[in-house]
Length: 430
Length: 148
Image (cartoon, rainbow over all chains, first blue to last red; front, side, top):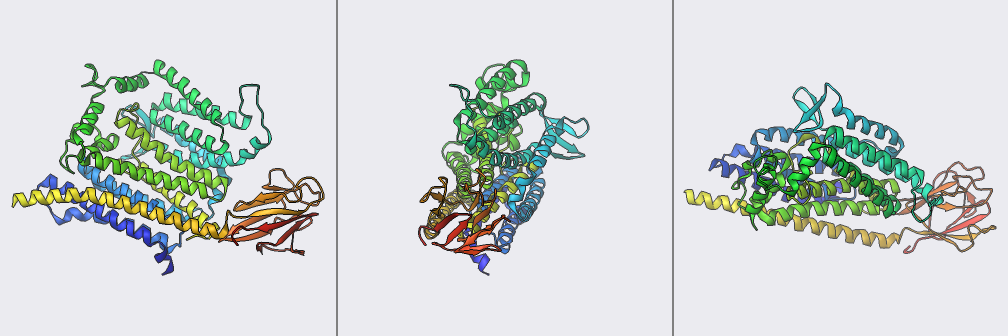
């Protein structure tokens, strides 16, 4: 059992994840019922079994490289389950089944495709699929509008957020595209006088991405997706070319688009308005109510929080999907919120290290882009919850309630682990 | 009884936070050890390796020029190769050098004039050791791996 021994550090970390999930669940259940029944352990124990099964699966497949991402993702998912139990216990079983599906998607991504680099060969397929998924919520029958944003697909009672899958497809496409055209730039340094003009292979996608992002903002009314979409592209463009100027062009385009959208569309202006003056008399009990209650929850948390199950998160509307960070911070305080952010930091840091060490530009860009998704999403939603930036409908990765988000995030983890596996095989490290 | 329950409940709540931090510290520990192990392994294969030009009739590449290797390094006449060779006997994409499990392997990509390792034309992927000579057309390259 050589392979099992090799992944021992991962197993050690998962034991702590198990302890975390079970204590959290017990605390919430006991606080709610003022008593404790053993059957309340079913959910956390099921989750622990899933996490250990994934570990054994990786060990059995002889996967090498990273041992940190699976435990961190599992810890975040465990915190997510505790919070769903606390904030929307009627959705708990649903979230647990999504966790099971996410674990299946993780395992499938570890197995398929056998050769990770093969992904880059079908880049135009991914691009086409991504754009189709992106516009799919606009279709008449299957598209759904929820809370003002038209970003959902629905069949019966099952709804799916196609944007979540799009972000991974986009990163794969960008990585393949930028790898191909990196060499074009190295040979033809075309510069138009004092203002450097990007060569056509860069200019076209920059403008195309910006145009698509603006379409998403106008027709699907999803500010968060717009920001993520463009952010991922600009970050990967910068990583591939090292040209800060291209990123600057993109940011300027974003500013122009944002400015026009602010003046042209009510929903954008409303978001900014709530962000700037949530306590104003006309907003406090209206569209700014959610944010105001979120801020009260943050403040109420203090240094060590009110204790799990002891806060008042039910005051925040839709707290289980939009405001999990504030709810968590209220109950475990600054100390807990800091640890949560440190987990994300560690995840992203590990992902970037995997990117740095990856053997080919495609794998480097892939790993960097995937890590950047998690970083940007965390930044945008925590920033929105804390009123640092306007609030958007982005989910807190792994933690917020939501099936499509959980499934795609676990597929993201699988891809990162596979890149690190390839690297370990190439370099001959464990 | 009720007081015991309240104390227990607070115990569990505090335990949750403590476990969260222990997990975090353990995770940092695992990362730290993984990085140290990687550095040690890197020491063995030192910055992957370099190809040094031994013989070259033209000006590109010059004799003595050094090409740092990537885990998958392409060699050929095209300027897009990692190691571009301006020799009419070289094919556009001639050969590829790959690092597999800490060992260098060279593979001919079906070139017209073939690839020679230490004077012998190779048929399939061939293991390359430090100091081995790789000849393509009239150009000869020597593999060097820092640590050995």
